[in-house]
Length: 498
Image (tube, rainbow, N blue to C red; front, side, top):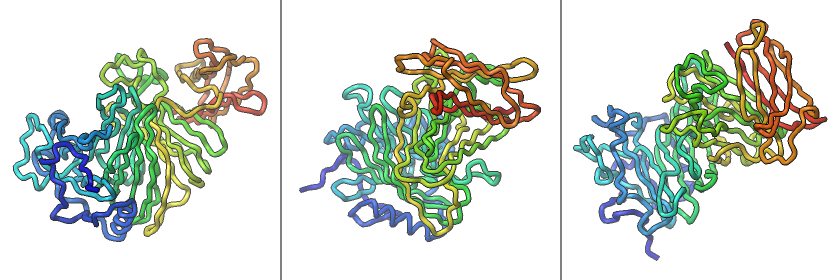
């Protein structure tokens, strides 16, 4: 059978291997091809991919870069129709790493050659020498919200970053292939995807293989993407250490938190909240569900939650009321939450949360990832599998009350007052405050005048207490609601800092 070309405008789209042969491979393609390439790369000294992005593209403003649009009639995978489409992103602005793109059909991989004919350049001058240009990544489209109307559901662009949305959502936080040295004084390393192989889409899924590279590690990734409500990515990753890696972050997530109703800080803003995510959720190996509200600190803060065999973690956008944002442009109330579900036993380690001071919403300043207990030695390799779910909240809490709101303000006698609401979504019988035992801890400092009352506004409970930090600049707090020997709500944990 003749191999089908799933490309628009096939007569004008050149599929040819590059003369440089930097990433050339045999025509037959499978995941083992990418594994072998990553392993071979790791055995050699790191070399940045070429060619460098030429001017004027290397110095484009954000507005000029946004004006470079992929022509709809050149989209991949639309003729014959597959239910999916793909647009290739141009290098320029902050996207300065050239990325090789190949299409896989019938087990055969064909590189896609760059052509300026793919693009409307707007006010940007088209390249005089197209041979020195490459792609920067891709966006994939599907009729996610309305039949027969293709809209983007994922974007892979910039280092190893990628984003996705579920039905009726808009783009927000990002995932990454790998994090190295995040929050360290000597600086963070940003591995990058240098090549993608996109398989011919199936009826409900698209598979992408990606080659990661960087000074300390390489990696082979396979993403099985199923857009919908929710959208899920199954990720198979094998990482090859080129150097000793003391601080590695697996399944990293990156988001933005500037302020919310609990802590407006010094922001003179008409909006009550500005954030892509407002909490870190953890389902640990002991079957405890944790909720940690995010905070934009004065100084960099690192929190590590020790665990063995984690069930999942994620950066969650839980506040869904438009009036808490009043932002028609960013639509914070429609941004996705992102949940990581390990497949298999990840062993011992930590869920790490890094909160970076920020005064501008354009910066991603929240990072969460899994850090294994042992560092990674040069020459070694590790493999992991996990599922990313881009949805509205955490997976089923199995009847637990969920933390719906955290508020804070000045209390009496120099203390700090906290109010935490626990919502009983879908519960037929409201929880009675008289049946609840409170377990509350502060270290250092102490908790005073704690009151649990029924809150019909959330069909649940409200906890109010005062924190005495006892002169400390940082206090770790933990609150459990129990009935007998069982927890009845997410465990609320929070780091208060001056």
